[in-house]
View 1 (cartoon, rainbow, N blue to C red):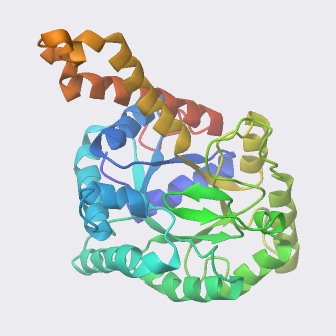
View 2 (cartoon, rainbow, N blue to C red; view 1 turned 90 degrees about the horizontal axis):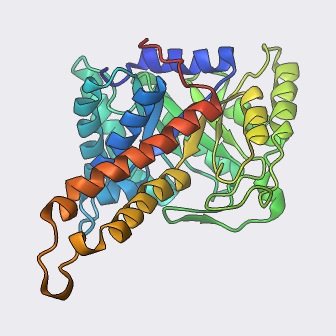
Length: 343
């Protein structure tokens, strides 16, 4: 299917919240990992979100060239073409953009989408994240308030981070106090006061409840998904809305238990980022392939190797399929499997 229109993306998120599931959002950094996501979503019968970070966009542009906006546009154009061959609907998103990267990442992409919409098309990306977690909340929200009208004008969605996700992802690193890892109701009220509840433009909020980026065994991250319910209930009471007024995003989910994920989704999470686990699935399969085909992929002791085995397509297919399996697991964990609006 073609990439989701703004209306389809809104329908995806609305359906997820109404039915109590969430869409996985997969970070990719190459055509192979992008194709792996499309394969996995198709096999699971799930729609989903494909996203790229500043580092991923840099890599798309060529690892010797620092041109992340170019790389992000190349990612998007590739995705727009190849997605047509798959029977699921996907949205495109840019992940973690800290303040220093706005000028060479999100803003040029917004300008490209503004031109596309002006010409009668759809935005190139359906949503963008502004990661203001490294600046004071007032400044975070002030910048978000400046970006949101531009997003509304092209019918795209803004993602904001309110609080701090610990650990590191693509060079965005946080080592704040433990208190900073937990968003408060007061933080959420400040967000609503600044950004509204949709009337100024739609946004998703990555509230933090102990999340940490990176690799952690279950039990090593102290998540408090019940905090999300406390915040949603507090906002609903204050503003007189229905339940779960915010569309929430779950970052730093590696090592989370199924019960923790289910509770977060029940409390309004409609998007969960997946990166570390799919990276490992992709690379682990390549390592296994190389060990199993050692004599074929290397010209050992004067041999010639086996071209059919060292052809990058041979191990590339193995890696894509292995990552696709992990993609499918995520859709079942979040409840989006079999929920495609394309079905």
